[in-house]
Image (cartoon, rainbow, N blue to C red):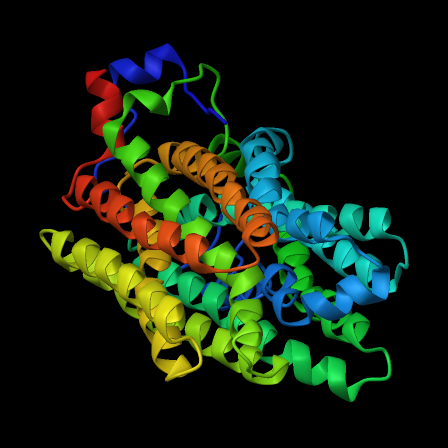
Length: 426
């Protein structure tokens, strides 16, 4: 997805100076919505943008049995997060042009609520897939638009709100993974309760965003922050391309883990509940990454040591699953969880490697859709390879190799280079 600006803007540089005056606090706009509501809205949406994906893995076997779902369809279900985040994310900036960023985010949350409730109540495989795609599409709108919304409204360039946002994303994913199997076992509705509860929870996020959208009353600045007239290709920015690769490789690993890591553990002899707890442990470590990485990025001259560490952790974690999955299973979950610090890093770099909110919106609308399309290949391919080989060996070797590619992409975005400047020079 490409979002540009008028040619006349290019002559005065689209990049806003780092010291450009901003509204105090995290207040949002001229209608007087306060910092507290802004923070509440960011926190609540962040914890609701992942449960629709992470809650499915621990109960995937039960869903397959309950809907009589084929192995190939199950593979498609695990690939849907990446596919939908890519496809719908590519439409997010265009939607923001028409209705504004805040209204676009609100519409996305409404789709999350409807989709998650609908898929928990249907007995049709086709409707289950459609409802899942609707919910994931709503999450995709939030994925792309929230970082740009934060860049526009935060007085510190987005460091504080991005810290809450990145941590909330992983917190929501971790809690959903941990509770899926226990809720399924405890409820007479089984897996339907485990999946449907998150649609109800998402209503809590929808309320503050609708309130903010109403208070803004179509604030023209809300539209300008998400829209311009002349497209500018981010393929001409080496930093944008490398950040897309970093995000895509990391997202591929994350959604392979969401979809298949519990099954890897279950195939090694662990219970569904224990596998869900291990998945939760892995994703919960991302909360720590979300808390520290925005500040690390803001204060570090280079991120190169972090990028090398991420790659080494990926290789080590998958090697442990290959050689001894049932021995010290928590250790492999911890190692892969630490490698997952790459996720809040990539998310925070979207705001850290851009100055102007319009560039942030364009960068978010480029990095995430393209990255998630790359990520979608992973879970689907894993399902195919697993069905063909009846073994996890080849899968885990290929995932180990992804650690090398992650490091190479990460090194390219390690220094303080701004996409705005690269676009001006191109």
